[in-house]
Length: 202
Image (cartoon, rainbow, N blue to C red):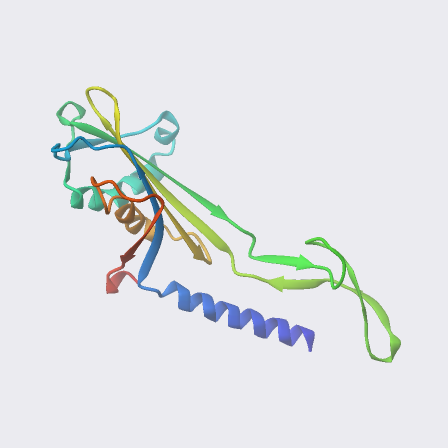
C-alpha cells in the first residue's frame, strides 16, 4: 500500500511539473546598476571574455548567441573588430540546484534517519520515510557594459529566474531580454520582469 501511494504521489508531482514547463511566461528578478550617460546612443559593441571564459569557448558562444537579440533590441550593434567598438560587453551565467528528494525519519529530527513504526498485530520494525519534492533551479545571467576608451563600467544588470525541474538553456535569451528590458533608464532593483515566449518556443 505504501509503495502504491508513493508511486501515485510521484506521478502527480511529475504531471504538475509538466504543466509548469508549458507556461508561456518567464518571470525574472532583475537588478540593474550604473548610470548610462544621458544622450549617449548604445552604439557598436564587441564581446569581452575573461581568461576563464576563453577556456570554455563553447559555453561562452552559447551565452553570446543568446544575448545578441536582447542587445540588438536595446539599440546595440555588434562589430567584428574591437577597434570599431564603442563599448565592450561581458556576459556570465550561473545555476544553482536543490535536491529533488529528501529523506526524513518517521520521528525525530534531521533530514536523514531511521524511524520506528508499528504495524497491526504489534509487529515492530525499522523504516525509512521518503518525501518527494521537485528540484528547484535558479538560473542567473549577468551583463556588464564598459566604455572601450576609459574602461569605465557604464551599465551592470542581472536577471535571476527560479523554476522547477531542470536547468533549461533555451530560456537564456529570455533572461537576457529581461536583464536589458529597461535599458538605459534607471529602474527599481530588484524588480520583477516578465517575458512571454513565442508560441513556437514553449
